[in-house]
Image (cartoon, rainbow, N blue to C red):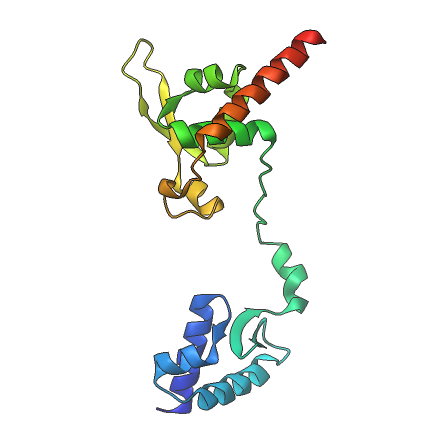
Length: 189
């Protein structure tokens, strides 16, 4: 295999992966010796280091990664849209957990469990794409039923809803007691 073809293949792998890739893994994929891959990648690193390049190849623990040069940050920030990090308040987390465990569920059912209006929480969770409308209940008014989304699974690092933690019955009793205590505290105030 010619060196230019090998460089093109390494470049394609690093660009596509977008993360550090072990030299040994690249060598296996390209059916080359690991030392050959290291040498070619390091030569490419020198060429990418030139001032007329906006990207670079970096080496991390015998792995290589293609990345943007730090000197390009000011240019990139002018065009890149930094994703807004959503903050999940206690109210949102509580509402989300109810939806996750009880889905499909209507807003009215969530409100019955929480004991307060959930309009804002439901709207925020839909906006954050953590829950979505999954149908309508066959009842008067045909209320919307909600369930979690793939975005929910992605954000919480789960492959499926089967990975949701199982709440033990004794914990449920503890939660009920805590809720009753909170109600008594609020009534005493």
